[in-house]
Each structure stands twice: as C-alpha cells, then as structure tokens.
Length: 334
Image 1: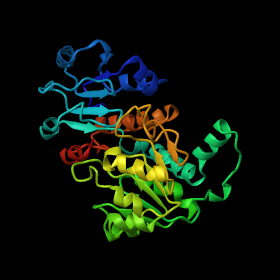
Image 2 (image 1 turned 90 degrees about the horizontal axis):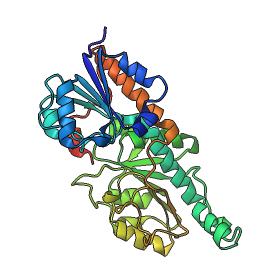
Image 3 (image 1 turned 90 degrees about the vertical axis):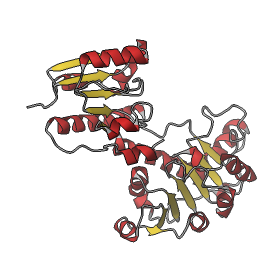
Image 4 (image 1 turned 120 degrees about the vertical axis):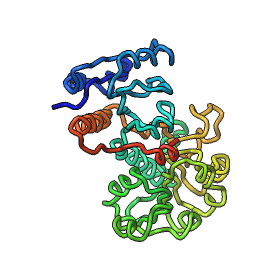
C-alpha cells in the first residue's frame, strides 16, 4: 500500500506536455489519496508558499518553473522529486540539512549529454562546420579534404568523471580509443574497473591526447582551471569539446587559440548565453557550436519522467532512491 499521504505536482502546461503526457498524470494520481496539480505560472513566491502550506503535501513533484521552496516547509513535506537538473534555485542547503529528501534527474539524461559530446567530437574531426560554410556560403566543395580525420583509434582525454563521462565511455567503445581521465575522485581501482588510465596531471591530459572532452563540474576549485596554456598543449589537428560548464575554462583564451586554426573546438556551453551575435566563435570554420542543448532532446524527456516514477514508487515502498542530493553534492552543483 502506498506510503504517500498527499502528492503535489507543480508544473506549467508546457512542462506537463513535456514530462507528464500520456498516462503519467494518472500514474501520479494513483500514488496518493490526496492529490493536487498546480500551475506555478501565476504564482508569486508568497502565494506559492501559501498554497504549498495549505495543501501540506508529503511529496512534491516539480520542474523548472517551480518557485523556491519557502524557508519553513509544510510539516508533512518529506520528499521533493525534481524532474530536471539544477536544484539551487529550488531548495537551500538548510532544507537538506533539516532532513528534506531531494532527487533530480540524475544519470537519466547522461547518455544524451554524452551523445552531444560525441556529436561535437565527430563534427570536429570530420570538419563539419568547414564543409557547411564552404558548400552553403562560399560555393566550394572539398578543398582540404585530407585534413579531416576519424575517431577510430584516437587517444581521448576526459576532464571529470561523473555520469556523463561514464556514458561517453560507453558510446566510444566501438572506436577503440585509449582513454585517459583527469579527475580527483578517480583512483587506480576506479580506472582499472573502467579500463582507462589516470592522467598524471591536467597538463598531461591536454598534451598527450588527440581529443579532450571537458566534463568537470564547476565549483570554486575548477572555475577557470583550464587556461590558455592547456589549450596550447593540444597538438595541431587536435580537438577540444565542452558540453559541461563553460566557466571551467578561460573562454577568451580558447577563442584566441581557436582563431589560430590549429585545433578544432566543439562547444555547447558559453560564459554568456545566448551567445552574443558579435561573438568571435560565430563563423569560425574550425568551431562546431550548439546552443546549450546537450541535455535531453524533446523525445527523451520520457527518460527523466520514468526515472522520477521509479523513485516515487520506491519512496512509496520504503526503498532506497536514486540520484539523492546530499548537502555535499549540493555544494558541488551549479
């Protein structure tokens, strides 16, 4: 029998269409005898806090548009099941310290972010932007075709080793790439378990590999840790891809190096977003760009929904949850 006494779902019509289509709302209603669906669009933080307190749910399911949880939570509230990713605008560290359970979409979207990293890697190696500009804009054809390359057998270095990095490893398995990892939490046992090597340093990661994929979290330690020196360690013909956090890198330095044309660059994230019309990254033939869309494509939002439903059923059954956000994890998130 369900252990959930009251369930509140907070979602705009757009979020309902993306995450709660089909039978999902009916599945959620069946989890608790007390159920309410709230559209946060017309709420202020104060009116949302009043509605939350009045309903007094045990569990809240919510998405991007949900307003911040009030400092004083309703007495029954035990669990917030967040359908998406970053949680800092939703709850405080204090909420977690006082016992609120919180989950997000965790690794449910890792494979789609990894897929975007693979897309940029292949686009850079195959000179996709160059051919697009040459054929569509300049009337050219295959001038310099011999400069294109393949991923097969390339040495790949990954900065960071979270769920996206591990999903990326699975995607590139067929290419037979030797992989090196630079991450503080990767010891020899972890490296051996994943059939990778540990880079001796961040410098070594950039100097010794053909493709560098940036997936480190952004925190006070990593902010700006990748500098111009690192970009210049990449050998001519090498590739740098970032689908993680732009703030980990010195973006101005990356642009200077990219303009020289010796390496290819693939970017889904930028310090200033939307990317300014005057950005120097626009129009460079050796730069592949996407507009911060490495997360789930619309057809894969179902992965996040399925993950949330598994957690809700586990909670109702008194079983462990996946992707629980601890205070320590909260500190490392951006």
